[in-house]
Amino acid sequence: MQLSTVIKSPLLVGAIRFLGVILVIYAFAVVLMVGAAQQQVSAALVSIKSDVGYSAAHAKILDLEQLRREIDDLIVEERTRVQEQREAEFKYQELVSDSDVAWSEVDAALQPLIDRDLCTFSPGKDQMALWHASRRCLALESLSVADGMALHAALNRSPSAEALHQRKLAQGRIADRAYNQLQATRTSIAAAREKVRQGQALRSAFEEMRVLRRGWLPGASLLVYFPPTLVQILLAFTSGLFGALLITLVLAVYPKSTVKFTGGE
Image (cartoon, rainbow, N blue to C red; front, side, top):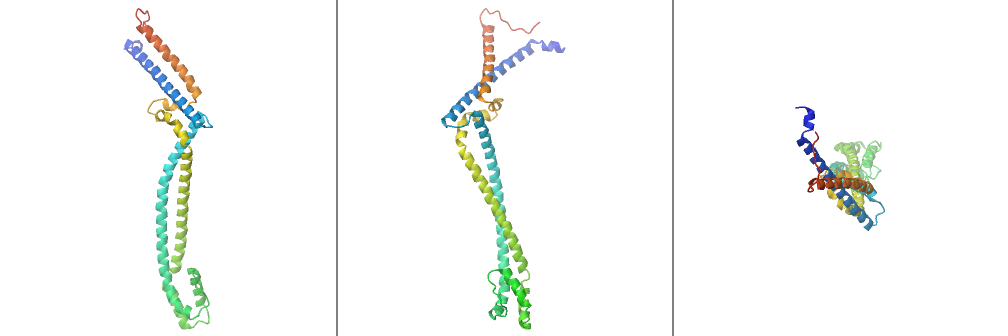
């Protein structure tokens, strides 16, 4: 069978014409729905006294939707930050406990020497100051051999005390950084939610577009981006096609009509 024969087939020509009719009807219906929805949105924008038109308002709606997606991502990030902050704080508290135990052993051994004023320093609350002051005291010539040995034994009783203190300080900085990151994430979430709340009026105005923007109706979600003026031009064009189609169909089925559809010779 030759290609020209297939093209001239009445069945094929009829199928093409039928698809063309369906396409014209569908295009007219979609453009009509989008145009009507845009009119409703424009009226809603006027009612809320919006200072922007349809296109600018639609751009803001897209920004708000992107912001809502970012909020979802930030919420996931917040959960991660909370877990990191808890773990960092837990490790810090563990090191604080271990460091306090180590320093309590040193303090207990040094207390007899402190009570006898063998060394002129005040331990105060700074553990590292106590450690370094004890080292200086150990180097004093006035310290007897017995007292020097006792002080040396006290300092050696917990050799990890200084290392634990340094690890505690480092972990404390990590815990502070994790806390600051968590607070920054929560601040970002709060700011984004406030912007979404401020744009609630615009979102309500675009409720008429919700169905069309979901994309299940082919072509409608694309036309939503068009300014109302262009949609009205498309509506005029498609309505003209639809009207011509109706007239053609009426003439074709009208009694005693001489109009016929043929596939050619």
